[in-house]
Amino acid sequence: MILIDTSVWIEFFRARDPYHSRTAELLEEGQVLGLTWVFGELLQGAKTNRERTLIVEIWDHVPKVEEAQCFILAGLESSRNRWLDKGIGLIDAAIIMAARSARAQIWTLDKKLKGVLESQESYH
Image 1 (cartoon, rainbow, N blue to C red):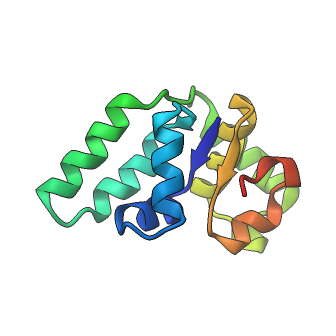
Image 2 (cartoon, rainbow, N blue to C red):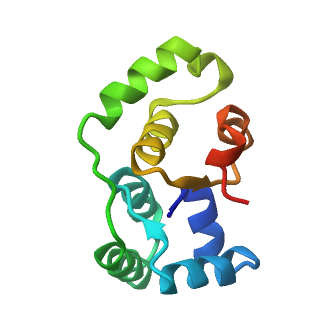
């Protein structure tokens, strides 16, 4: 399973390949996991009703990650590993912890986020 970071979703919604075609494939295959805070970021940045509708439709159809305690675990792990000093905020730390709990990979374009992931945690 794949957790798609906001940076990749933006490229998908802009119809930029390879992100658009690969994301569409992953969605068709049922391989995309949803996180409320990623979809919340997408909705916050949506400019039209069409964009909002599409984001909500995708949200409604993807399996969701269990998010209980993710922010607490993210705060702890971030503190232990000094992720904030490496430019990793709480949202990114929570994405990492959610992916770990779901045994999923993270697909991101964020270099700082990629920099703290183990190789097996990153989707290429």
